[in-house]
Image 1: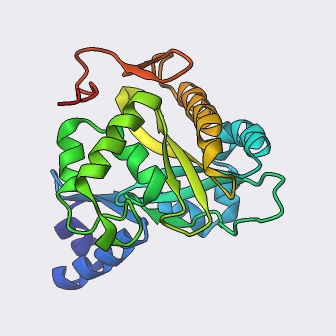
Image 2: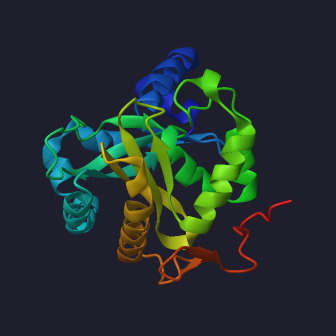
Length: 252
């Protein structure tokens, strides 16, 4: 519905209606289509009721993958769902480590934050990727003052080759994170798999491929074909299918 339609339905001035919708949008309760200027309900609504959340398909589908991943990495495994400029925690499993991470269901991260930000950015098409990079506030390295565009572009290229991205204590000191994108139908990135823990940096090479492989399996369960619509998987990394607009940049 457009802003005008909504305000007519509830008998509000457009200025007041816009203010309310903008607030709801910040919390993921509504989404705005920038092309059609229409509003629709957002996934943030699902976290207003635990009974609704328990009946969603996403936790049911991803939980069998999160459980073994959390145990194998001895970390916290999370599935995040993209909504607007945020990623919402839809499902999580704790590993066996003594240190736990108190992420509640419904917790939201900025879409550009750390490892998952790089993993999502890496698998957007070039137009969408540049649109994200044009924003003033980017949180790939935590504080926006630490943003390094050249470094980010290099890491994005590496992520496209390996299938996963990582953050070594930059967003939260002492906490390391690995993330891989999750796809569904029509080559659409809908979320990401995130592993959060205190594992040492030298375990990135061991845990990273596991996270990427689990993300691939979840993608298949969510409707992406065996090539994830855009990338073939050879057990070591993703190879883009030519002609789909997602080809990896060649190093200059």
